[in-house]
Image 1 (tube, helix red, strand yellow):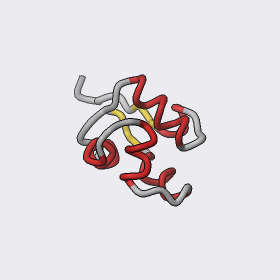
Image 2 (tube, rainbow, N blue to C red):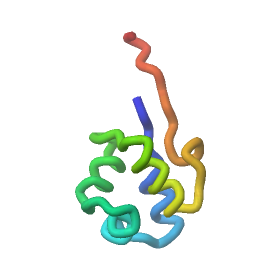
Image 3 (cartoon, rainbow, N blue to C red):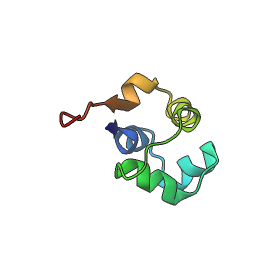
Image 4 (cartoon, rainbow, N blue to C red):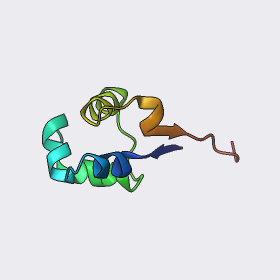
Length: 69
C-alpha cells in the first residue's frame, strides 16, 4: 500500500488541489483521489508532484507492505 503525504505537503505550500493539479497536469479529482489513497499515481506523476511540492518521493510517499500477502 502506498501512503500519501500529498495533502500535508500541499498545505505547507498553501496550494489548493486545483493549484497542484494544474502544476502537474492532471485534474483536481486525481489529486483528491491520491490524497484519499484511492489512487496510486504512476512513478512519473508521483515524481512531478514531489517536484512541485519541493520534496523527495521518499518524503511524500510511504510504501507499506500488505501483511496478508
